[in-house]
Amino acid sequence: MRAAALYSAAGSLLLTGLAVTPADGTPAAADAAGLRGTAVAAARARAAALDFGACPGESPAGMRCATLRVPLDYARPGGRQIELTVSRMPATQRDPANSKRKVPRQGALVYNPGGPGASGLNFPMIGVIPEWRRIASAYDLVGYAPRGVAPSAPLSCEKPEEFFKAPSLAPVHPSDAYKRERVARAKAYARGCAERSGSGLEFYNSLNNARDLDVLRAALGESRLTFMGASYGTYVGALYATLFPGHVRRMVLDSAVDPDPAKVWYRENLDQSAAFEDRWADFRAWVARHDDVYGLGGTPAAVQRSYDTASDRLRAHPADGKVGPGQLQNTFLMAGYYDDYWPSRAAALAAYLKGDAEPLVRLGAPGPETAAEAENGSAVYTAVECNDAPWPADFRVWDRDNTRLARTAPFETWDNAWTNLPCAYWPARRQVPLDVRTGRGETPPVLILAAERDAATPYDGALELNRRLAGSTLVTERDAGTHGIGGGPNRCVNAHLDAYLLEGRLPGRRAACAPRPEPRPTEPAGRGIPDRDALKGNGA
Image (tube, rainbow, N blue to C red; front, side, top):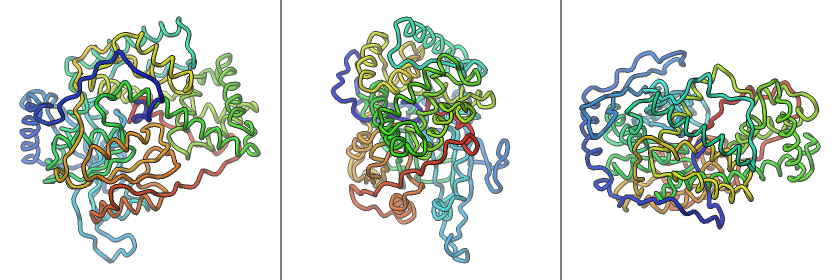
């Protein structure tokens, strides 16, 4: 589950060697002690409430922050506590179409951006965007940094200055020697997580993230939770609905993770890698259609050859000494997440092949100013996924499955495997994944949003979640692949989102929206290409 979440079916790939025993699906079977501890912590948080004041660092006018104390271990609610940082922008209560008309406040809308390892502290700022103004008029927009994500009891697995190893390689068919090197690195990383994070490492997991959400609900003074989760945040939301069905008011799950316990998380990552190959093909086809602009080839195969040429050159002579094949692959992986990135990536590749490396360096070179944040995000991602479920402990299983998959999906397969390989050598106790599901009438209807060609969270996951959450509605953006579609440029999707959050209206069990327009190409000039995007790397 790299950089957000996961996956569509990996074709006929058969996976063996990983035993996953699903929980029986009931909250009581999952963790009665954890539920009791959550009730204790929630009552304590409601009594204390949140004391909002200035936010750390710079923040927009009106946004305030607070800290929320939660148990490290919910089985021991009176034991060690950690503090989560919470941000809030109060509802404007003004109709964006008529500022003189007052809008009734509907409470707090809590947002989880995914990862694992992503922070939602900046979420309340989204209320200034036109697509979000109606929602911001009715709801306090509430974001937070989940446990482990700085500044909320931050995790670390290695020194930030050692996190970005650049330039790096990205072989699609790695040699045995390279595999041995990566196994050694994975073992060292897992040891580092234990050494730098201490005995509490096992408590950074998805079940505790869901429990934290219920304590936050209580601290906000809400009897029921209105929640929006994106990517990995949909898994947190689905766990919450299963554990605390009576505490749900409204819930939006955008770009849904497949909650099948047999897929969490090893199989999900294989499925994700397969889906990224399809999305990589979409990108190459788009570049080929605009060969008159980029000159990278008039067919997807020709565009692939241009990419391979760049990768070969960077292996021999890294751009600016920092951008090698690994940085190239990371830069173009982001195009698999977001269509908006297609023009800048194509332009940078075209410029590089014509002798101008500056745009590619600007997009791909790791920056020391982001190292601490990136290292922290990677540590949280690794801890949560490794703690959540069993993983194969024998590298031969990883080698077999990823070698098979890389024959048909070479673009992301091995890079994804190396990201997750520390889980094979993880030192902390594992959870058994909860069998996510709700019965009819147990919760209000949930709104699920999904793009049909999303690679980070393949569409099969949305279908599975729709089956498991009784009464839920799935809105699909057809023939589109951008990751995260709510509040974006698709008016049809936003109409469903607004109708649900503002009025509680849903279109039925399934609805579809036409795709957003494809991005327009831009000239391959060095100036004007966006600055380096923060790598999501390991996260939701």
